[in-house]
Amino acid sequence: MRCSQTLGWDILISNNPYRKGIADQSYMNVTQVVSAIDTLVQDALKQRGLPPQPITVDTLLLGSSLGIDSLDLAAIVVQLTEETGKDPFEDGFIDFRTVGELARLYAAFDSQ
Image 1 (spheres, one colour):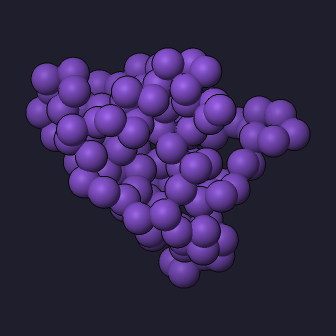
Image 2 (cartoon, one colour; image 1 turned 90 degrees about the horizontal axis):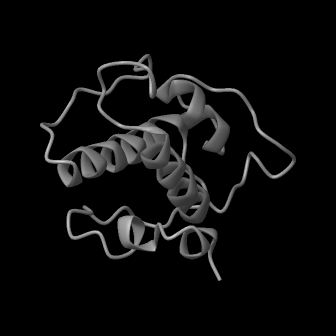
Image 3 (cartoon, one colour; image 1 turned 45 degrees about the horizontal axis):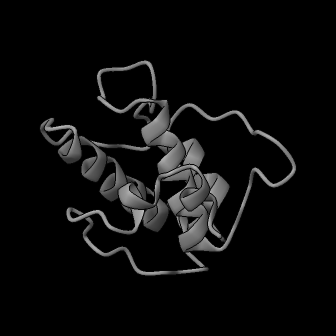
């Protein structure tokens, strides 16, 4: 059973009608992960009935006007783990605040 299923996020992740179909890629670079995060954030915003927001590597994920909450962010982390095959939090929590910091945790190599 996937973690997302145990937490009830499978609806947000697997059955999301707004998903743009991010491909399963085990070797994503930072730019690709940022793009995946952007797609997931825009999907979360759409589900909340909020307008799209611009995303950059410096965008704060929580505590800003972005419009997602900690549950949305947790679902994004679960989806990134499933799509990249990497779990940077396997040994415990790693502090991150921005899209770029999160992307670097999941990237196989940095192309920036």
